[in-house]
Image 1 (cartoon, rainbow, N blue to C red):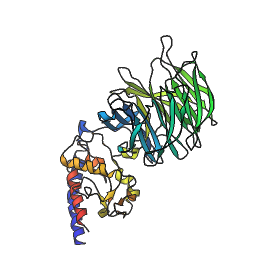
Image 2: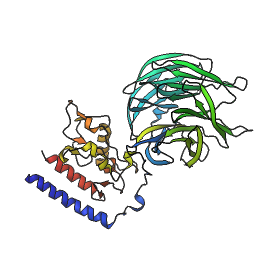
Image 3: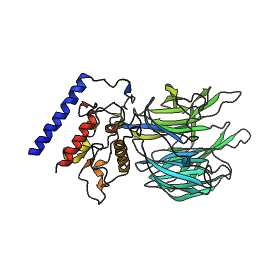
Image 4: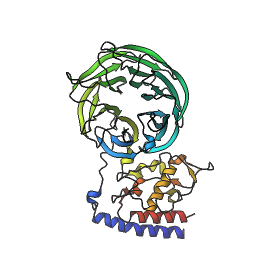
Length: 476
C-alpha cells in the first residue's frame, strides 16, 4: 500500500507539467501535424482501404477510401525478387490475404506468393509460396460458401485451373482444371450471399464480337456455366458491386479513333443469368484501373485510375438501380498503379483523441499492473513470452525506436491495437500476465502527439511512458 501511494504521487507529479503545457500551447505543432482525413462514420470501425500496386517498381500504397481518398495507411517497396505481374486478394475466414504471381522475369520458374494483410492495412507474414508449371496471365481470388479459391488461366495454351486456399493462407489442392478454346483476360467474381458466380469475357475477336459467359463456382471448386453471349466490343476493365441485394458489374473499353471510351453497368440475376443494362455512357478518357467498394457510410463507390502523364483518379457514387451517381472526388497520384482492390479496414485506428476510451471494452476491469505500453522502456516485449502474428512486428518497432531509426515509420503511422489482445497466450499456452496494447502513436516519429486519457502529448510524452512502464513493472 505504501509503495502504491508513492507511485501515484510520482505519476501525478509527472502529469501536471504536461497538462500545463497543453493548456498554454494547444497547437504548438504547427505545420508538423499530419491531417489523417475524416474518420469514418461507422461507430464499429468497419471501413475500407484501397491497396494499390505498381508492378514496374514493386511499389505499393494503402489509403483510406470513402467518398474521397483519405489518410495514407501504408507505403512500401518490395525487393527486386518480388516483381509481381499479377496480383489478387481473397478472404479466408476473417483473415485477408494478397496473392501475387510472376513469369520468368528474374528466375526460370513461375513463382507465386501469399501474404497476410491486417485490418490496420499493415502487411503481415508471407504464409505460403512456391512455383507453378505455367504463367497465369489471369489470376483472381474468390470465395464460395466457406471455402476460398484462386482461379488462373494461361494466355498461350488456354490452360486454366482452380485451387483451394486453406486457413492460414496456405495453397491447398487443385479442385478443377482444363483447357478452353479462348483466353479470358476478364474474370470478375460476384460473391452473392448464398452463391458465387464468375463473369468471363474473351479477348478473341470473332467477326467483331467477343464471347462472354457466366459460371457458378460451387463450394467444392467446380465451374457450372449458367449463361453466355456476345458483346460487340472488348471491355478491358471490370468490377462487380452489390446494391440492395442486387448484383451488377461495371465495364469500360478503350477509346478508338472514332469513338470515346464506352462504359456500362449490367445487372446479373440471382440465377447467374445476364440481366438488363442499367446505365451507360462515354468518357473521353480511359481508366484501366477500376475498383468498387463499400465505404464507412455504407454506400458503394467506384474508383477509377488513369495511366496517363498526370495519373489522375476519380471516385463516383453508385446508386440504387445500378446507376452511376455523381463524382464525389478526384485527384492525382504520384504514380500509376495497375492493381487496386479493397481491404477491410478498421477505422478506429484513425482516432487519435479517444483510442483509449474505444478500448474500454477490451481493457475491462484490468488494473494498471496488467497493462503494458510497448515503447515504455523494456515493458517486457523484447522477450518471446507471447505468441501472436503481430508480436514480431511489435518487437521490431520497439527495437528500431530504441536504435533511433526515426525514419522507420512514416509520419502518418496510426494507432494499431491488437484487436484480439484478450485471446493472447504465452508460448506455454497459459494466459499472459500482462495485456499488450500496441499503439503506434506512442512511437510516432514527428512532434504530433495523441490524446491519451484526455492529455495532449508533448515533448515529455515518451519520458512519461517510460516512467509508467518502470513503475508498473516494479509492482508485484
